[in-house]
Amino acid sequence: MPDSRQGSAASQAYRGYYRDATAAPDLYLCSVMRGTPGGEYHRRFWQPVAYLSELGETPLRVRALGEDLVAFRDRGGRIGALHLHCCHRNSSLEFGFIEERGLRCCYHGRLFDVDGTILDMPGEPQMEKLRAEVSQGAYPTHVFGGVVFVYMGPPERVPVFPVFDRFGLPGEKLVPGSRWRLECNWLQIKENVVDPHHTQILHTIPQRRGMEHFADEFRNFPELTWIETPAGVAYLAARRVGDKIWIRSAEAIGANFHCISSVFETGQQAKRATLPFMSFWTLPIDDENSTTFYVSHIFDSDTMPFDKRRYLEDFGQQPDRPYRDRQWIPGDYEAQVSQGPINPHGSEHLGSLDRGIALFRRHVRRGIEAVERGQDPAGFYIAQQDVPPTIANDYVIPAAEAGIDPDDAAALRAYAERIGRQYYDAPPMAILARELSV
Ligand code: FES
Ligand SMILES: [Fe+2]
Image (spheres, rainbow, N blue to C red):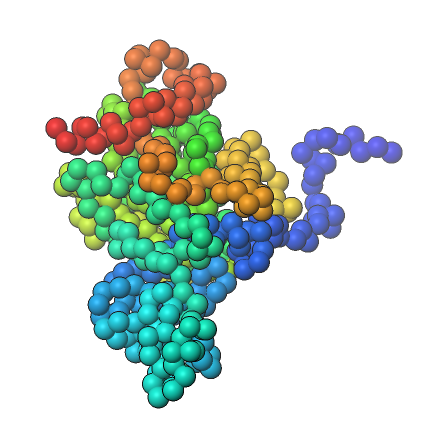
């Protein structure tokens, strides 16, 4: 007899026995290891590996894209990133000595410059010959906002480090953040950026359980839409706040960058552009581990004491609280890491609010395919003037001025999308730069 409940939610009851939870991870999309398509893709972007403040008197061992490296600042102030194991007999350079120029291996004293060339081989009569034949693996480095980046791709084509328009605004200071180490694949972290659906749930748990965090206005579920941006994906979340319409956006760019405006925004004051709040770069350590580095954008107009702000920025991003507390008020860390070391997409069942996830995966897939074809992926720039504007913003307008019914969901979404596209004619950060310089 056919089940009369077929096609209804009830027909899905007690399906545990039939549920196949054995989907394999999509390694084409997720892997970052050397020689994989994804690994080649990630090797086209500047990767964050340390905060500058972490480079002290001894070398810093780091792991990036599955490769073990050592980062250091020599006494002349130059930054190096070398393969961890010495090209002589493989001792680890994390035990080496930092010199005026370069890093010296602790075992037999080969001295390596920041570009990996050999400067000295104590006692070796064949030194000149050997120096011409061998070097230590090295990668170009760049420091920005107190974060040290390396470029691990082909040295014939090194991209410019993209200085986005949220950096260098009048009166702005960039303060380096802390390390967020997550035991999961990088993609889980970046997908979260274009998933504003989670903000209304996960990030309002603190308020609902008696802790101050995101502004209360985040509790009103917004109308969501997404756009593909020149090098990534942005969401636009539109809500009514009193007699205003508030459109919030955040953006993920390339493989590893994303940026947001303030999580304390209330959407009550009319504005076309708002201050940048945090910018993030996520390093895939390997396929199952990642570290996010960030900078806080600080302005004189900030009213929250910095220590409190930093506490709230870091809250829920690390397993640094008792398990019971993490269960009671889980954060991004709990949500993302618990998806598994590499979230198997075949076991997911996406809904209509997950369009950002689908768009971001498509963006990454296209990037990987471009690299496979020998092209540059979106987010790879040879010249600074090619770097497009960023559109993470809060746009607040009186509903009467917007000319739409703020309670009409479809109209709200269409309006938000229109505002998002207009950002390319009048970039929010350009508006802000003008406002801040008067
Ligand atoms: S192992 Fe490094 S100098 Fe010998
Ligand atoms: Fe989040």
